[in-house]
Image (tube, rainbow, N blue to C red; front, side):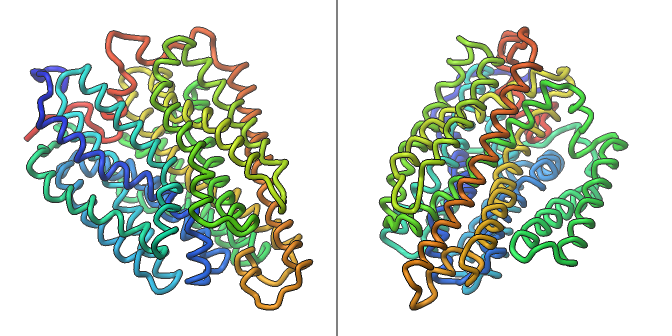
Length: 515
């Protein structure tokens, strides 16, 4: 078992190994959000339909989220470093292909490849990292840095994308991945060790395509209906997707080694934690995507200025992720888990005063206030989920918490983005499916342009209000349903169990050894 290994203080090799591992982690997180400010430029160059634009953004998140746990188990069986190297190489290939994609279809394909590769990187990177640091306290510190890097990557993705787009073409947001990937492929075999689990559960082959197909088909139906109405294609695809998800759920309940242990949701605290992993990222990703279009296409800000407007919120989110563990030690996990939802709800509702003629100040205030809530939620979800279940099920709990983050990131754009697209289709000038496509039509009258921008802002407000109401409702529910005696995993014992268990579970490393 892991606990029987001889621990020692980490030296230069271990800390260099940490830096090497953080490279792919940062890339996986950033590429979930780096396109938010780039989409107006991508739309201008590739002319995707509204449906294709949404797929460009969120096929990555769906691929990561639907395959994360499966690849964790595969890494346990066949070697985590080997899978990490393979995933990094595939991520580099996908990045290069996306940078030079000649059309929206190719860009979607390469974004999907990047998502599949990203699903191999996260669990394997964290498992290899936990083997690198054998001292429990140093390992917890390293995993904390890992978690802060992952959360910070989501936050700074749009900012870095904006900086690049102010100087280069849109493909540069993908080419920046290549130096990091190449450096990792050179240094990883030198600094990291191969790791396999001695007791890994059997992979249920059918569960992997069932979950992926169910998610993708259901979301495709929602997007198709938002753009073209409830056509036979949308309804039929949606039914197939729902049936696949139902089959997947039923199968997990009967398997000895399920990909997702749905029985954990019988605990209300765990359920609240899992939803807290999903909903904030859904709100953040949708508002960041729609906000990027609002700043550039509605207010007419240059991409660099739009990136600078997003910077305060990104900074607050990242700092909050770092300081939240200390905050939780003072106010408790329950208070933090409840407070985060009210901060997010308040921040989202601050978007309502924005309009077609101004609102930069309101937008910045919204991202700062909501950023506090996002940062808290990103930090406490795994801790709360793990503390809510018996120790022998901690692995499954942390895996579900991590998967909910990835699925939330994609669902926000898929569902709230589709809602905004539907409102634009219903209230806009009916000349094109998206605001950017409409504005590219030559000879538009100022009144038509104003109507198009107003329809988009209405969609942005609707997405913000719905997300804000959901967060407020979840905050009230958590206030009423989470017991006051709730302890974090770190409070329950002598070691920071939550951080340790994120590594344990994401890669199924409950009982692992180095080769």
